Structure formats: C-alpha cells, structure tokens
Length: 255
Image (cartoon, rainbow, N blue to C red):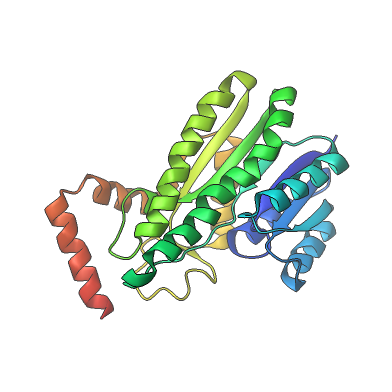
C-alpha cells in the first residue's frame, strides 16, 4: 500500500525541497501549485525519477472550490491519505504603505490562513474514517511577534497557529496528528528580496529535513531551526520597551 502525501506550494522553495525529500518507491505524491507551469512539471518529473507516483494539480489555495477539487481528485486516485502538508504561503509585508493595509492584510489572510483551511478540510472526513494520518502546517516565527512592517503577515500566521491547535484537539480521538511548524528564515525566492538581517538562515533542503523529522515524530508545535527558536524566544519574552528599541535600531539599519 502506497504512502499517500499531498503537498501545497510544491513548485518551489520549501515545498519543492520537501516533495523531493519525500518522493520514493511506494509513495504517491499529490503536488499542488498555483499554476501548472514548467516549475511544477519539473518537480513532478524529478519525483517520478525517484520512484514516486505523482499527480500534479494547479489551484490557488485561496480558492476553496479549486483546492477541494484537487484534494478530491487525489483521494479518488489513491484512495487514502497519510500526510497533508499545508505549505503554500505568501509574504506580503506592508512596506509602510498604510494606504494599502486592508488589501495587504486580506491577501495574507486569504492564502496563509484560509488557504490552510481550504487545504486541510477536504481530507478530514477521510482521516477520521481511517483513524490515522498526519497534518503538517507550515507557519512562521513571525507568528510569535511582529515587526514594524510584518503586521499583516504575522497576524495571518498567528491565526493559523491557533486554528491548528484547535484542530489538533478535535482530531486527537481519531489518532490524527497535527504538527504546526514555525519556520525561521529559509533561503528561497521569497526571502532573497529581504533587505534586513535574517538570523539563522538555512537552505530549503535543511528546512525540508527538519520538517520531515518533526512530522514523523508527530511534534505538536515547534520552531525551527533551533537558532531561530532561541532568538525568537528571547524576543517573545522581551519587555515592550526593550523590544521597541530593538525594532527602532533595525529600522535605522534598513534606511
């Protein structure tokens, strides 16, 4: 019986690295990306070379109907689900553009929060019926504390953290695990345009290895890598006035 894994945001970054890591003989992979372009087809081909049976789907996770259709198509082909990785996300920081805060906040919530729900809900009935399976939700260290221009992004990730915790408690009786991963800075196209210091920066392959380990161990909530966890633990406990000073200093360095 094949291990059935469904991954969103699979065409690049962490999603691509995780897809390649999990691909292998005896694995059925459902790879979802916003568009069925050359990038997704390349990842699918590489996964097939490693022995996986691959099904590629194009859908924007903010579109509940399209995402549910892709999930159902995968279930119809494979007949089961073992792991769902809700990885797709956006990082639309406000860049001090207060006039567009509403649109930017909606854009973040549509993908980072509702996109996770749209990804996971179509699999819940099957998971409950199977009485086994794992859900992995890729969150961010930004969920733990916001910076001066990460408010919309941080809010979307904090929301998904709390939603995931509630989901975990609901699915416990069905032996379905939920792992929420607050990921630090990863070297991807999304972060390469950042103009600020990114402590604990790791490669996408390293992130995929850490995520894979946490899913297999059924960890509830984790921050990775440990260097980012340590730094953000300090920030999380830092008194407001001191944190304000840290952010003010960071803002000056960006100017």
